Length: 257
Image (cartoon, rainbow, N blue to C red; front, top):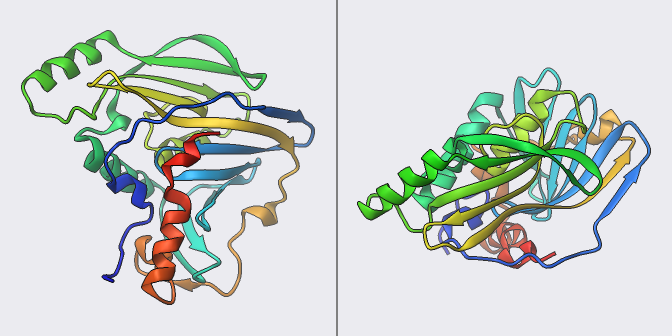
């Protein structure tokens, strides 16, 4: 089997339309931090730990991604492969923009959004954004010219919350991780309608627990080996192990709560 060089193989597969079924979502309110359970079309199921010191996302694949104040760098690591990779905070965004563009022919991060108004997600005060009418018209015209894929987004709707953390870098970190447009707050939900009129669930938050998040929970474990690229983090002792690491987090069925 050839070597694999993908952090999240889901991003290289054809876009699949998924349905989101109602679940017993949960919100609790105690402590000075938050633990979110989120499912992303880009990276699968994960736990998001947020405190006044930083943020960590622990994916079901075993990959962890963390950044702490003053948010100069991001660390991607796996305790299974015992590897880690550090990169500048700004470069982290660039990686995921390229991944989205490979799937759709256009980057979701470039979609212009308008603030529509206040809403709530799991009882948390939030703001709803939608793509502009001008963008939607442009996408339809461009598709008629056959210069973009029919899997590209025609319209988008995203919900974020500024009530979870006052640190704007945490929202930016998650926007970049999930391949979302820049918004003011922590992303909680995102859906896109593609040029075939299919609705895609891009991000779902199924639980939000207000809890103490110790600084140690955001730190990188000792004993990990620094590797040259983020892709190398998922390469294990053999190719079968590397494949399993990726597939554990890339199953599209995980978008069914």
